[in-house]
Amino acid sequence: MSPLSVTRRQLGRLGILSAAALGVPALLRAQSRPGAAMPVRIAVGGQAGLYYLPLTVALGLGFFRDEGLDVRVMDYPGGGLALQALHGRVADVCCGAFEHVVRQQLRGVAYRSLAVLGRAPQLALVASARHWPLKDIAGFRGLRVGVTALDSSTQFLASLWLNQSGVPLDAVRFVGVGSGMGALTALRQGRVHALCHSDPLITMLEQRGEVRLLADTRTLKGTVEMFGGAMPGACLYAPQDYVQSHPAEVQALVNALVHALKWLQTASPTDLARVVPPSYLLGDRARYMAAFYKVRETLSPDGMMPEDGPVTAVRAVARLQPESAAARVALDKTFSNNWVRKAKQKFQL
Image (cartoon, rainbow, N blue to C red):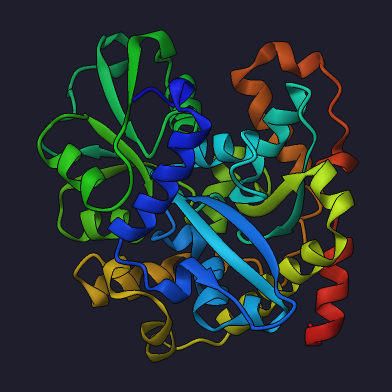
């Protein structure tokens, strides 16, 4: 199913089925408080990844409920489909890559980041130890690269690396492989030569000797090497009209996520095990925890946008879309720290 052909009804059904298929407890899919709970639908692409851990924590510990929200998470195979759900008004807000916000503004769509969850993309591009072509890839045609979904942040990162390596993007076939076991199977069966994905999956593949790293943004150092500065990863973003018409919901959402970020600063493996659904561990708790400690430094400590983050994101987008370099991006309209500042006061951060 091409992401461009997905209808609004199919997006809604796909989000519901994805959550159910992952075995996500009802608490994580719908979290309400009796009384005057405010309903909010959050689209996300592959919630099981550490990329979205603050969201999982906020759900699992009831932080959204504490803020008076009735949250429904719609989990899609990748960020591109989650973005489409937001476009189609199937969802109210989205957890996804900040570069989506930048690219949408270039298309005339007004989205705004409300809180930053990761101060790095937390993604890695790896080559299959068995199926990667050993010849010079710049001259290799028919390269197949697995990404969570088309038009996702995983495709964006893979495209940047391939472009830097002299590989024409029209010589590459990007294959949507989803998250979790689907991505693992695609790589092992040779349906893709390489895979761009998040942890815990990448760490598990590394430790089993099944892949070699091509690009790694799961650390702050690796992110600077790839992008030349601080590159925001996951964030909570919403259409500008929703932000203006639902101020209470927006502040409550940010409060819950900032609370989760604070909790994660001191969380132990035992603490995480109590919150993270067993299916997210991919059958290996020890490797999941190893992956968590690898990416922990990239979690935002408070939800604030890195000072040079928006500029770095625009520069990265321009590398793949040279025509956009001349387009004027209103950086002050891509994000705001106002809601985070209020949340920091509430939680003494």
